[in-house]
Each structure stands twice: as structure tokens, then as C-alpha cells.
Length: 184
Image 1: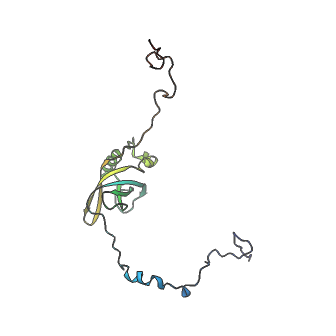
Image 2: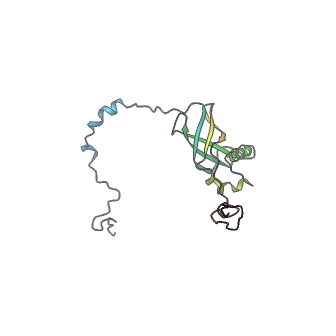
Image 3: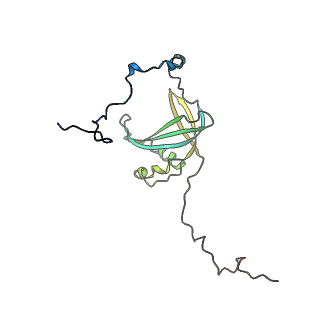
């Protein structure tokens, strides 16, 4: 069997799975004893309270949904809270794609400025949702978070080509103040 070598130093044997640290039995962790003793042993994470939040759309993905009958796909939204409270916590919204729920998906997309001719065009348009700022309502129902889009705070910047090139000077325009002769 050929001997493998280390890529960084071909003379040394392959140490890909080895670390160059001291064995755990010789480490002195005493300096952390006090902090460890006072650290909580249970997680104290809590969900943001019900209310309105300003959020930033950080990610939107489509994935297959196998646990909801009649809905083969869902749109997953990852929303970072910008304020007024619970800053930098995340909310998650799901739009299930099915005959009964397609209207809710369409309404959310239109609120975000995404107008589609057909839902089959959605995967190609997901990039337009990332970075949007929205105002949302968070409701807690039956132990679950329900996120409802309220309004778009910053409309997406759509750049279209101007009707004419503004940088080109029109020297033939008689109404241009720069071209008129000074009377006097």
C-alpha cells in the first residue's frame, strides 16, 4: 500500500485527521470554572412577542413539501427582525403551494412587487425578494408563529433605460438658456 503524504509538506505523513493540540487530559480549564458554574444550564431563548416588526428578507427558497397533503412545494422565507424590538432575531414564514393556498402566495408576492404571469416562473424570480424590507404582523396561534406581510417599506429599485440619453447635450435646442445670446 503506498504511503500518503501531507499536501502542505510532502515529507510529512498525511495528518489530515490528526490535530496538533495537547491531549484533553493535560489541558488546564480552571480559569473557566467560575463562568461555567454561573452559566445557565437551560436555554432561555424566547420567541418575539406578538406585534408588528420591520424585517429584512434574508433568504427565500423553494423546497418540496411531503408533510402537507395537496401541497407538493413550499416557499420558505427567512426574515431578520430590524426593529422595533427583538432586533436580529429571525422569523420564518412558509407559503405552501397548492390549489387552496395559491391565492395567499400570489398576494404576498404582489405585496413584494413581484408580478408573475405564472407560478412556474417563480424560481427564476426569487432573487428579487432578497433584501426587501417589509412590515409584518406576528401572531401566535396554537403555539405556532404566524407571520403576515403588512406592507412593503422600500419598493424594489427598478431601473429602466431612459427614453433618451441625458448625458448628450442638445445644442440645437433654442430654449436652452446656455445657447441664447445675451441681449444687452
